[in-house]
Structure formats: C-alpha cells, structure tokens
Length: 362
Ligand code: NAD
Image (cartoon, rainbow, N blue to C red; front, top):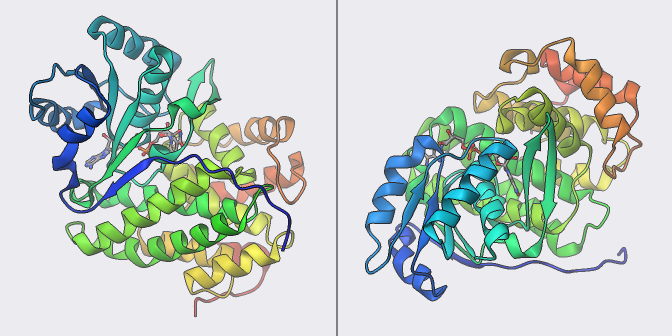
C-alpha cells in the first residue's frame, strides 16, 4: 500500500428518477429566494419550465452557456446575475452550464445547485474551466463546488446517443486517469474501477435504447463516481491533451476525450501496469487501451480527430503546447511521443494496430 492523503470535497447528493421535482425544497434549504437558472441555449425550454415551477421565489434565466466557456460568456453571465441580485445559481445541463454557474457563484459568493443532464462530472468538482485568448484556463476553489446535486436519470433520456456516448467516455476518462494519478488513493481507486464498470455496461444500452431508465440510471451513477474521482485526484496526459485540443482548436469537449482516451491509455501502458490491469478488468477486456477503443466503436462514437474538425497542421502546435506545459504523468511527456499519440488519434488508429498485437475483448 502506498502512502496517501484523503481530502475529498463533498456535496449533498440526491439520486433517483424524479428527484428533480424536489428542486424547490432544495433551493429553500439553501436559503435562496432569487436563484438564477443557467443553461445552454438548447436547454432553455426545460430550464424555463423548472424556473416557473418554483413557488414563492423570484427566479431569472440565463440560457447562454457554451462549451469551453469563453471569458466574454463568463462576464455576461456575471452581469446578468448582478442585475438580478441572484442569491443562488441553479445549473441545469452539462458541464457548460455547470462551469458557468461556478464562475458566477464565485464572483458573487453564492451557492450552486446542480441538476446535471450529461455525464461530464462537473457537478461534483471544485473547479471550472474557461477560455481566454485561445487558451483553456482553470480556476480551482472549494467555494465553487455545488452544495447540492440532483441526479435525475429521467432528465437524461432526451440526451441523444451522439452526445450520450462521448459524454460517458468523458466520464470514463476521469476514472482512467484517476487510477494512475500522482495523488491516487484507495477509495478513489475503488470508485474509478466501479465507475468504468457502470459506464461500460450501460453506455451500449443507452445509445441503443435512449429511453431505458435502468441504463440511464446506471450511466448517471457511473458519471457521479467519475466526477468524484475527477474532483479529488489529479489528472494527467489525457486531460492535458484534451484541454489543449478543446481550448485552442475549439473542438467538441466530449468527442475529443472519446478519441484521445485509447491513445492516452496506450501511451501510459508500460508505465502503469496496475492501473491498466484494473481498467482492462473493469471493461472485460484483455488490454485497457484496446478495450477502450472497442467500447468507443461499439457505442458508435467518433474515433478520429480528423472527423471532428481537427486541422492536421495543428498537430505540431498541440504537441508543443502539451510538452511545454505538461501535467504530472506516470510516463514523461515529451514533444515527439505526444506528437505520435496525436498522429494516431488523428487517423483513429486502433491501439493494437499501433502496438502490433491483437487484443480482442474477452
Ligand atoms: P455540454 O454541457 O456542453 O452539453 C452538450 C450539449 O448537450 C449541449 O448542446 C446541451 O444543450 C445538450 N444537452 C445537455 N443535456 C441535454 C439533455 N438532457 N437533453 C438534450 N440535450 C442536452 O457538454 P459537457 O460535455 O457536459 O460539458 C462540456 C464543458 O464542460 C466543457 O467546457 C468542459 O470543459 C466542461 N467540463 C468541466 C468539468 C469540471 O469538472 N469543471 C468536467 C467536465 C466538463
């Protein structure tokens, strides 16, 4: 057993089909009367209905959240919250809405209540990301950790397979990197393995039968575990690369994670045999990297950066940005090896083809 430090930020979690009906009582529990609902434009209608359902309160709605959170979007939301004199942020949606709520809440010193509808995990992490000058930056502060999270699988039924699959892979990425984090600890290792298991068994059903509430519940459960891992231990080369690709090339967040993850696992294969064993076992595969790739193919998610708008000439720059500012990683992060990883991810090569061995799932 390695030495460890366990210091987990915690939120009040309410999980179950229909729990979003308890929004009013949970807002009251925070002593809030003037909440501001924050959502992406696509979720405006639902957020508006939720706002109207609150009795004896004066809610406002700001449905302007966008992925990677440009700093201008943060400024506009902070202005809207100030105008309303908001005393609570209610995030309804995925990481875009939740991260924007955190940025607003930090500015005003008010709590966040999150109702997540994707599998990204932001609702249980004490940080948010935003983009300024083409660079993705992060703010870490325990004050932004949502005080209350309502996980209602019924709200995820409308999430289309094309978003559900990659979003679930985003959650698996948190678990994978949590297993070889510099500050890994035994509890997060248990959560990460269970998160991979829950997502690997549920995602194929979720994309095939989006209205299957058992699978949706299982996936959301896995996403919660993944979010806790993300919020508690450090992430490594996979998140490093994904943040650079997302922030600098404005690529879709969850799709980038989906494509890069098998290659990041292959990159760390020899440096972290124990983590790889845990990942492979949780996936029911012989090889972690290939098992992840096979799952991506199985859920019909994208496998190649070239298919989601990555310019080939940007690979050099991306590798340079990662190598110049590397996160901790069990294997040293150098320009040449990262450039090769990106080349493989650009073309969507399978990890077994780049390794020269066949790794069929069990
Ligand atoms: P997202 O929040 O951008 O949502 C993706 C799309 O799905 C949006 O168009 C949204 O309107 C739509 N959508 C969401 N829920 C829906 C539903 N139930 N039905 C139909 N459509 C729905 O996607 P995301 O991947 O969750 O978040 C990405 C952003 O979150 C990035 O900016 C990323 O950096 C950030 N993020 C932050 C953390 C953190 O811990 N701070 C973690 C993960 C992601």
